[in-house]
Image (cartoon, rainbow, N blue to C red; front, side, top):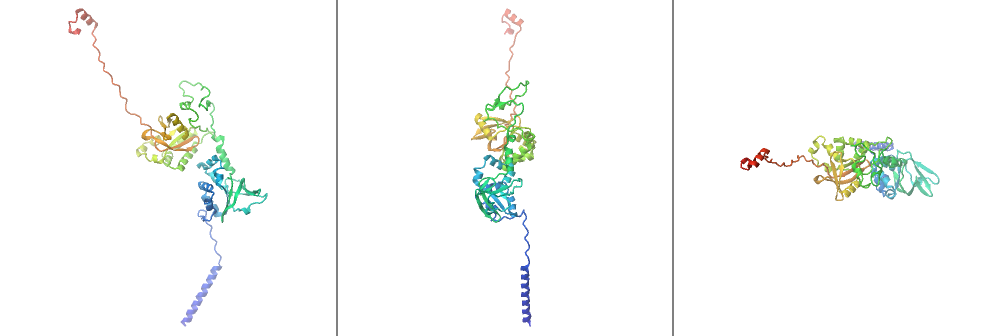
Length: 456
């Protein structure tokens, strides 16, 4: 009796378990939720990983410098992409050096991003999808700032992408994209226009003020006599310009006011050079003093907007760390220290070195009047200051745009201490007056003879 009940129970349990298993297998699977953009995961078989590990090293370095990795990860997580990759030779030898410097400047990051995104299409195009014969295909790129499209066509049996010939079709194939090798760089019109505007004469050429005296570029002297000026008026040219030996040693020319409003944008220029200091590294303390501890950044922007040029002798962080609290705690002390590092001329490392090589010692005016900073040649470089308070030109030409020049030095400069001792008075010789006898006494002595004591 008990065994029958126990056997029936085992049979019923087996039947229920089998029914539930079949029912669960027949139910439709729930669709998996799509990953969000912020949590997109890229596997090791991705086309983006293949690009970074491929022989297109120059292109992969530019992608990293342009900060495009996150953007491309989001694009790959949404759809397949096709990358037209220029070879290393096209980016090293065949690219205009001036254009390459333009792309790598910190202020032109957007142009570099647009240039790289113009080589990528948000769809999968393999060699079998290429148009044949006279047909063409126009595809939009990942570059959203340009309406220009990429043209795919076949010419003389060779595949072309716009003006570039495809040298390696289907060079790298992955589940989420394809990479084709092309012979040259594709430059969108928007990037080309930015480069031309930066290089145009209106943006870079010096503007000669109306009524300014003409100067011979060979001798750096006036071609014609200066107009007559009133007595006591300042000279037409500063003494340093009048005595400059020639263009090779004279201060580098700075561009005149440009732009549609014919004036400098000093605030943007100063902001650009401070950002360059931060990206360069090792000058964070100086940037902090210019922006936070003082209002020198604003003052420098006003000077540049008015047409002045500046050369900044920038002490690095190691030199700034040696400043004591007493040197910075006095009111106006940070400003006075920085004023002594600002030269109201545009000097580059080359012009400074040529000057000290020619003349031995050169005195530069500073904004801390009337003190001047002395430069001289030392160990193949330029040394500023004298004695223990000297500093060497350590990082030349950190920032040069024709208006502001930044030269890194390895020490903080201080003007020579003024002598406070009062000049000693010259010893005065004591003069003993000779006794002078009266005329009447002399006549009496001469008549009576020297018999009286008063005659001696």
